Image (cartoon, rainbow, N blue to C red; front, side):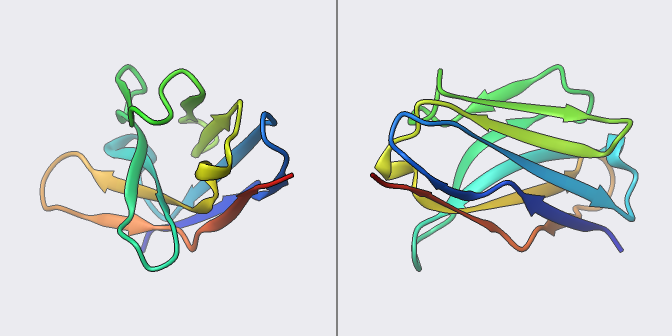
Length: 119
């Protein structure tokens, strides 16, 4: 059974930076595409960034393009989200998702980490 554990959330001032980490276990990491989502209150989860299983393809939500960078370390089984120039509207719970790229669809989610951008 795959497990994901996020880390790195916290309180930061507008214009500041944070790096989130997502550690994976119990799965063949290189067969999963990794993504970061965020959710504000009871709203829908919004896809923030995604990276292919080999790391060669990345995509971002328009709202974070140029400010956030997704990366992964396939040896350490960790996915990162570097967030720069943070804005109050980036405040949300951030979730890591792993989606299997072949065969039967399999998704794993982390428990989420709170990011608060406030002066």
